[in-house]
Image (tube, rainbow, N blue to C red; front, side, top):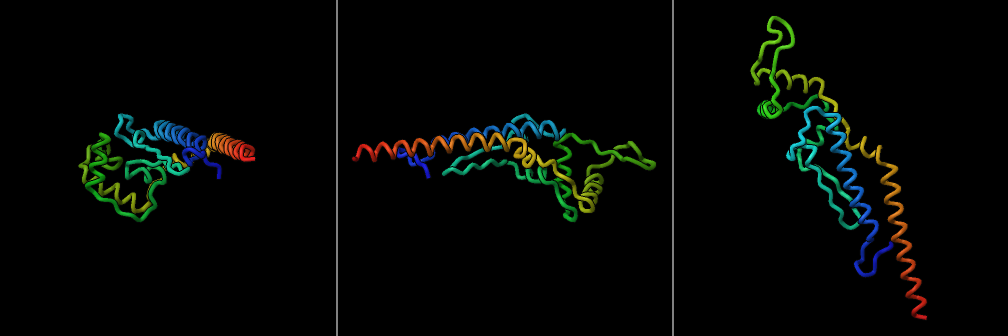
Length: 171
């Protein structure tokens, strides 16, 4: 593979990977803000939790929040949740539980009652994610391909130029 002789790295390729990582993080954030009405953009929420690393020509973009996969991929039915965590989640988002039907329609309900109802619904039906990762990759596929392809070609071209000049100098 084409390597810069002084550093042993694909200089242009790694620069392109850093650029692609920044673009992906921007797209993830934008998609979350547009498609999740509860997303927090105050520096501590999911939209601000993405980190990128480039190491040995490998780009990794990940979230520091443990629940990011549930937002992205959803949750299949059949899995019980912790009631205390559901209550904490609702309080963080200022959700006020109310009855939807029957004699108590519109009245407030306790968080524990609400959490039990929600847990039963999650066990029975689960919920769909918003697929921000997949949709972002599909949207940016052409940009990723073009940016990375051009950078890699430039690295190969530079390597060939250096190797040919070294061979000519040796003769």
